[in-house]
Length: 83
Image (cartoon, rainbow, N blue to C red; front, side, top):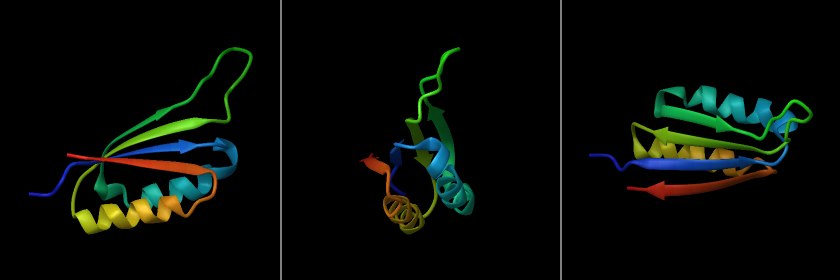
C-alpha cells in the first residue's frame, strides 16, 4: 500500500507563479486526489499570498517527482506530511 502524502504549498506571488504551478499540477493531475486553494480576499483587496493543499494518490515516486518540481519554483514553500 502506498503512503498517504499531503503537500502544503505556500505561493508568495500568486499572479506571477500561477502558470508554473498550474503546469506541474496539470501534468500530475492523476496523482492529485483532492486540491484545496486558499487566499485572503475582501471587497478592497486580494492577497498575493496563496496556500494549496494537495492530497495525493498513486505511485510514491511520481508524487515525489511532482514535489521536487514544485520545490524548484522560486517563491514557493513546500511542506509535506506522510501518513
